[in-house]
Length: 211
Ligand code: FES
Ligand code: FES
Image (cartoon, rainbow, N blue to C red; front, top):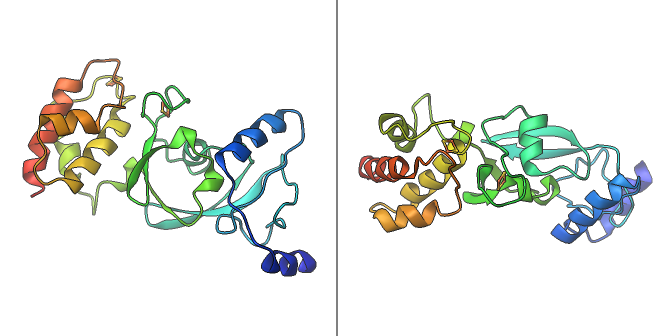
């Protein structure tokens, strides 16, 4: 282990690319995984040397979520959505399509919305993850969350966390959005219950309360 640590300190470390992640996910079913590693995401106690094979067994990584650094043990095939829901019990993030087409799984990576079902947890590295559980502050709902309640902008609720994440990002970055801005911000968020008109009204209303 000591040799490993010394070697890992002297070699350039590479981040897992999307291609290597997908390749790893496919190979894991055949019982063999070849992945390179993100130096920042790997716990150094179990950190494999760059270029060394690891998996399919879980390895321990650290990830900052909603302001708190968490330690979790994950297999190389794990997506960010799965890490949040299945390993950290942050089930507010929903997985509906699991293929990047509905945005129900939207979270922020360093403040920018991403579809967490499409991202390897090993690609998070030192970036901070914000989930729907991190949107309310000091027990106070964000104005968008409050407006969703007041405007009845949720039906079954499966799309709602992702929808809220998209709308919060809009009003936190645009003090005077119009209807087109809201439509644009939520264009990737599919709602099978047809709540969009309520979502639009709620978001425009909330934007007046965040100025
Ligand atoms: S669950 Fe991730 S985009 Fe649909
Ligand atoms: S509230 Fe049911 S999918 Fe949007």
